[in-house]
Length: 252
Picture 1 (spheres, rainbow, N blue to C red):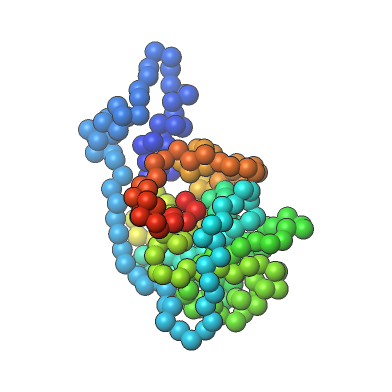
Picture 2: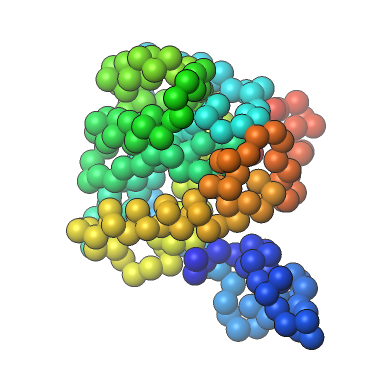
């Protein structure tokens, strides 16, 4: 986890320090800064969402919905990976309660079949008898396609989509995308296109099983996936100003 961030790094190491050695979070930040080890953000741009299409778009059903356990709300998104042969596209489905990636696929195109592969993987991991899941996404053509919608409806999964183009309407999916890219993908040399699937499988495994999450009591996604009930977040809500202005903030 080369780009995990100082707060989570401090959480992971503080119980393993010798008794005569103690370093607080702020001092750890200073130490990393002194040695030029703080994470530097890098950004690339590639368009993944095409919502100006004629297919039916669904309303946002999760504005006031807060999951209290796994298998209640999935959030989906598509992001991109820069390789030696151009961009590849990563399709992700994340359980909103646990932040666990439950389905993914990677492809060199933006066809709906790749989103369907990620969805089928997410469906396969469901325990028997689970019903009434929400599937939330942007209004991209992949999620509105007839085959994708048919698969959701066939499993009685409720379809929810963003309405205003605001990233906060799909904040968890956007956040998980950012974590995978910032902490792993951007930190490597440009990926070789023929090795991307193997590398993404490894990254998702480490993210799910080893990375603590500030939003879920510093549990890993896999640990949170086994729990139920409210999980306290360990980070400040920077959107309070928007909330006081009457704009509701989605599940974070």
